[in-house]
Length: 269
Image (tube, rainbow, N blue to C red; front, top):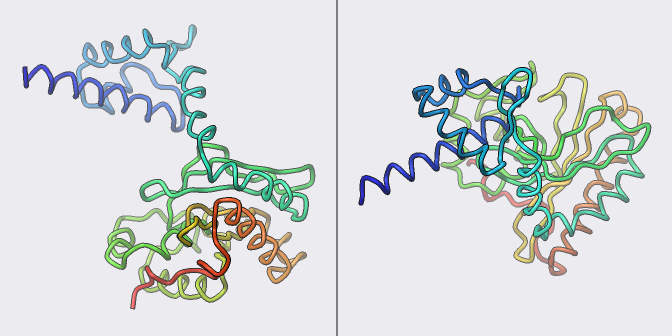
């Protein structure tokens, strides 16, 4: 019985792994590619895919024969948003903010070592670069990520910064010393900045959305070109982002006088 249970668990985990693989670029994979990534025989991989096809979680392109996610996965994934208090709290403040700034507005939450973007708002004339819903970006290369890093224990920050971090641009912060300085600046400002650290030529301003305990539950951010930031001014745009994040925090249950500013709990000494 124990062996059968273990085999069933392994098969289930492989099914979930396939779904995760198809959720990332290139979004479609052949049976051979899946078998290679999973390090399993083609026959075993085919059984996993057959299970997912039967459950209508994936589908197969009639021409390429590659596997891809089905619309059913969107219905399942959107259940998170339909039940998300953060999403509901930030919805209207983000709409208002998007009308006041030249860039696009995103809502991000912490998911492992990444920021997971769960909502995005933009209007004609705003920045052409934005975070798709469901997109994940590493903490060290995002303005929102810096806010989440602020509340992490020092050892967790050390662990993250000791990884072989990807350097997306020349300005991406990959050293713990530089990140420590950046987190101090973020704490002092009450918001986080990203100057071309993920995409060259683009900047991001992020403000913390806090829950009823004053803890950072999410981040509202604005992505705009560096020229747009220069033309409008950080001193003008940052208060608008912070105000939107505060409005969302109030909707989320933040009590007056709780969690003002940005915590320095995670900043290394």
